[in-house]
Length: 229
Image (cartoon, rainbow, N blue to C red; front, side, top):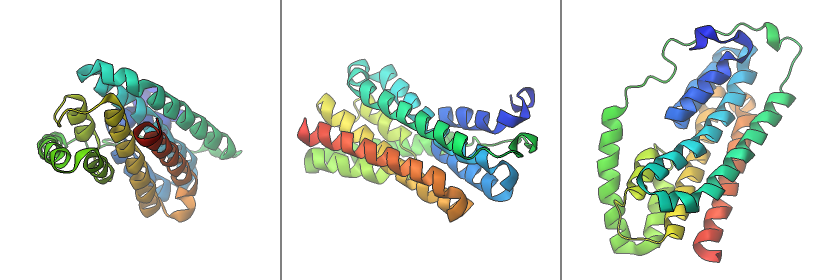
């Protein structure tokens, strides 16, 4: 698709497409690009934020496909976080504007996301399904929230899919929403670390800060739903 898109915005298409698949993988790819292609670092930085913005919508669609009542409870928080992320991405796009960026060449990647994770996804789904059921049976909702925080450091799609499909012991809609928000928030913190590791502190400061803000906002909402609502 990138070859048919105007060069100044091509890097952002990588973020949109990547966010529909894996915002974590996209963050790593774009962080590497920011480090190796400083002339177009602004696109990679904005793209990291945009990929996570798309992630919220993707997760909501996944939940809706398997558990529409849970999706209805989840939608306000996920859509609000997506809008917040879009605002942060737009702000960073604006403040990172430079007079020369429109002349910077964009080199389309041949395989930006290295989409070879089907077996890993299936394995994670089985492992997380078993772990989720055992943890909640043994430790209740607190155990499920802890597991959500742990899996957030990796790929959260298997956890979200398992939660939506009822792969854990029965739980209320509020518990399901809080668990998904916790997983998404810790995943954002992990992506901030990945961005800093692969792009370097200076280049990653903007997107990492935005991801941390999204993580904080999601964590606050999750806490309020689980304990304050």
